Length: 150
Length: 185
Length: 112
Image (cartoon, rainbow over all chains, first blue to last red; front, side, top):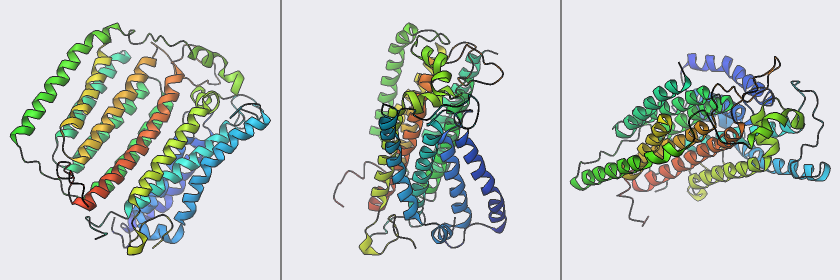
C-alpha cells in the first residue's frame, strides 16, 4: 500500500503468475456470456480486479509507468459510443434499433446468438475500464489525510 | 430442507450483520460486516436459482469492499458523543419503523405466496428465446436482445456516475497536485 | 411470507441507519444495505417452487424455470449501485478534505 514500491516480494511474485490466469478467466466469462452464467458485467469486473491486483501489489507508480490512464479513459468513453453505434447499425441493417442483425448460428456453439457476444465485449470494456479508472483516481487520495489543496 | 428455510437462515444472518455494521465503532470492521451482508445476498441469489446475479453480486461486492477499505482505511472515526437529543431521536426512529413494520404485515399477507409468482410475461421469453435470439442463457438474451435499450440506458448511467466521481475527485491543475485523468506522475 | 417480512426488516435496518447515523460512511453503508434488500425482494417475487435456472443446457433442460425477466432488471440495478457507491465515496473523500471530519452535523456550514 506504500506509494513507493508496493508490497513484498512474495505478493509480487504470486501476482505476476496469477494475474494472467485471472485475465484469462475474465475473457472466458465474457466470451461465454450467451452460453453460461456470466457475461459482460461479470467479466468486466474480473478484468478490472486483475488490473487492481497489479496496482495493489506493485504500487501506483508501476501502473503509471506501464499504462496510459488517459488511453483507458478514452477506451471507456468510446465503448459507450460503440454500443450506440451497434444500435444504429441494427437500425440500418436489421430494421430496428439494436436489432439482432447477424445470423444466429447453431444453439450452444461459441459463435452464435448474433450481436449478443459483440455487445458483451463492448460492455465488458466499458465496465472494466471505468471501474479501474475510478479506483486509480481514488488511490491518489490514499496517503494524505486531507488538505492537499490548501 | 426446502429453500425457504435456508433463505430465512441467510436473511437472519444478513440482518444481524447489517445491525453490527451500523453499530460498530471501528470503520474497518463495519466495512467488513457489510461484506457479510453482500455475500449473503449472493448466497440468496444462488438459492433462488439466479446464477448470473450471484456471480455479479459476488464480484461487485468484492470491488465495493476494496473501494471502501482503500478510501476509508486510516481515517479516524469521529467519536459520537452520546447526547440526549440523539438518544431521543434514535428511540423515536426505532418506534416509527416498528410501527411501519407492524402495519405492513397485512400487505405481505396479500402478496402471492412464496414460490408461486404471478408474472406471466416471462413465459414468452422462456419458450421462444432460444429460437429468436440463439442464446442459451435467457437472462443474457433479455438484457442484450429483447431489452437492449434498457442496457443502453444502464451503460449511460454507469458512464455518468463514473464521470461524476472523476469530476468530484479532480484536483485543480494549477496547484501541481496529482490527479485528473490525463496527468501521470 | 416470512421471507418477505425478513427482507422488509433488512430494508428498515438500512433506513434506520440512514436516518439516525451522523457519520457519512455509515450513511453510505446504510444506502447499500437498502439496495441489497430491494434487489433481493424483487428476486424473491420471481422464484418458482422447484424451478431451475433460466439457462438452457445441452442435456435437455427443466421446463419449469424461474422468471428470467426480474433477474435481467436486477442485473443492471446491481451495476448501477456500484457506480453510485463509487460516486458517494468520492464525495465523502472530498468532504473530508474540506472539513477534516465525516460528521454531517459539522459539515452544515457551507462556506469553504
